[in-house]
Length: 133
Image (tube, rainbow, N blue to C red):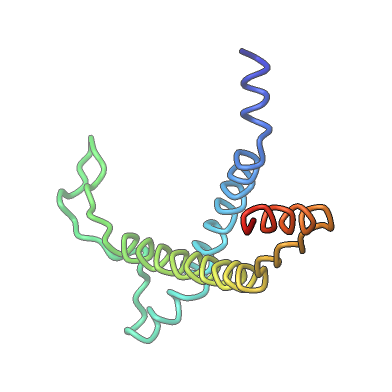
């Protein structure tokens, strides 16, 4: 069972998937920081100095025993922008990979079959001579 697991874990697809997940996680953090720290502040400034992280609807006011219950739709808007940027980036990578694979497939034309050997030619002649007699 251990050797089967080792064979499974060391297959190329599993290792490629693990690398993709790690890189994807790091890319997600980069995009989240880009959206929260670079993209949304100018948009908020254009919209009148709005900080999207502060946009919320108070469902229940804070009391001495409990904190306020907030519906933070501004953070949700930032998350949607994160998703759209990541989805577009993944779309572009897949599109580029598909175009490269399509070029590779079109360049790899099937090779012509090799000509028959001298023995095959002679055997075909003998066969044809026997049929005609």
